[in-house]
Length: 73
Image 1 (cartoon, rainbow, N blue to C red):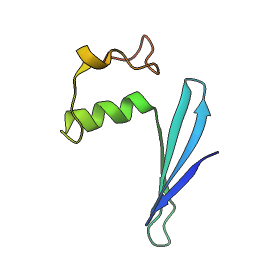
Image 2 (image 1 turned 135 degrees about the vertical axis):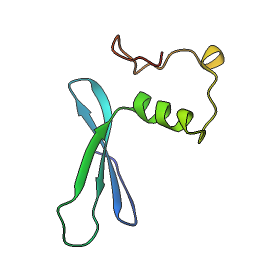
Image 3 (image 1 turned 180 degrees about the vertical axis):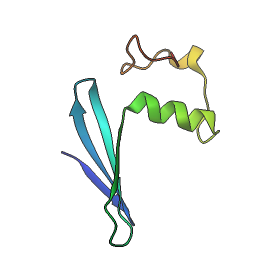
Image 4 (image 1 turned 90 degrees about the horizontal axis):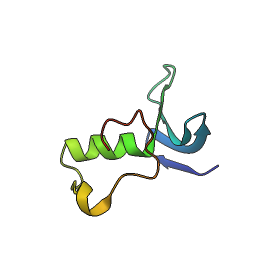
């Protein structure tokens, strides 16, 4: 398992029933940590939507992680 820690955020590489994913854990103070599991195509879609990365699906093609439920491909 790969792990990356940045200040109060930890990212772990995990596999779930839908394929490779990223588990993000935010820990601040003494409260219970907030945890979310997202897939690479979900992260890309969010970053594209908010302009953090460029979107050019015609050149890039569909994500290898997308499945039939992926609305962005």
